Length: 217
Length: 370
Image (tube, rainbow over all chains, first blue to last red; front, side, top):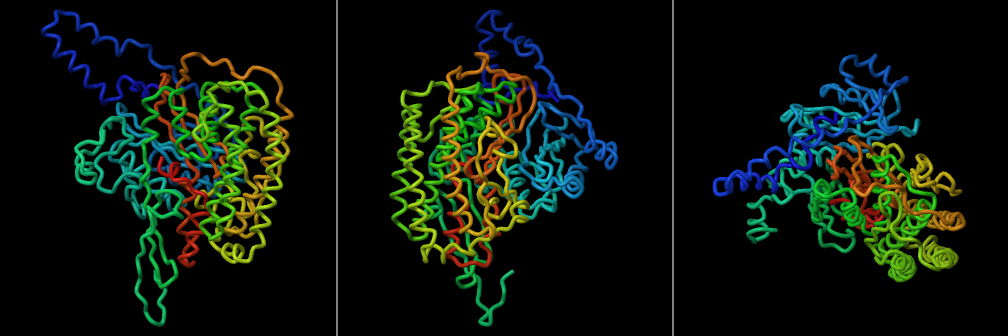
């Protein structure tokens, strides 16, 4: 899980990404001084892997029994359990957890963007069971353009949470009753929480048309 | 969707907000009406969106801490506590006992301040002007304690990752205990003004009912859930900061209506006072900061840590990639999730009731929009 997270600060592709080209254009005038900077990015040691341990018990074995290969990993990190499942199995697993294991409260749905990975997004469902007083995270990895099934059929609260994920990451949920942007204006371009959306970037056209100014910066 | 009346009335669409005094900020609700009856709502939010989660990815762990105070700005201490606990979990460290007890005192003071502000504004929405002045007066005393402690009144940034930045000031304990003694009769006073007040009861009883099943389906937490009769409080269920050592009661209601939520919050203030008194007794000299590396670089991994904020479950989902900046911070705001149930609560009620219902969810738009 950790190896894909490599991209972080340096690679966060945005304002800073403007500097390498600038250095290049300066190269012809300066002698060879600007060649070395090319190497630093790969040099830092790769970040340590997430030291999760396998999660064993009734629930993981029950899940594996019911879903077989769709359950890719059951693990624990710092005492928090999570299950990595195949994209198609996410909603059935959540439904199973609700009906068979009392995980009746969907706490949150969110996503994490790993632009360098083939399965670009981590879609994270955080569940809680009132009866067992226990939390579990269901994680599914999806590629760009994949339309995951909406969880609204199982948990009503998924409605706004999925709208926010759509708004921020551009993940479109299939069979969602009302998939619109929720925090950003309806005609905004781009999805802000993607890693390739710079912190300084904004929808220039929207700002010009709606605020009557050239730039909000 | 619209029930046909004998006059075959047509639907009326009414816009409420974003500039409306009873929406507690910049909430816009589009109401679909049949006469005076609400048959549907659509919340338009995002007016206060500042992209906090995006900002987090470009700040170090310590630098991001002040930003969380700006989400639920009337309960900034709780926000800070949740964030610090989440990062501490990632680092696998724990704040020393003295810091934990201080955190409990300040968080509970903040809970009282948040509930006081809620009570004043909620009562004002419904037409009772007097309580606002009283609650503001009491809240001022809490803000003074915050100001003496860390120099800020609202966006306090009271805690640091690993403990506290400042030692308690001289006379903190006496001042806090004095406040506790002083505030309890005031809470009784509010109850005298409101609890059996004919107008108050008529406006609140049976309004905005949300039963326990619906609460769970919509993920609603906090006083709204407890008013529906579910004895669920994260301080008890999954204790943090040493809450398991304190003796307090979780107040619950039966009907899940606006009136029960009012009663639950009033009792919560009293219970907070109880916790504060116990905590002041527990204050013992000792270190206030755990061993935290100068540069905070948690190992790669993901955690979800949540606390019982005054408004419900406030969660932080943090993904670390082993660098000095969080790879992703997701805030699970109670106000945002609770607000979703507004539609369910106000269908079939009258237009005037929506003011009471918005008030009773106790939303802060800074947190809804982030």
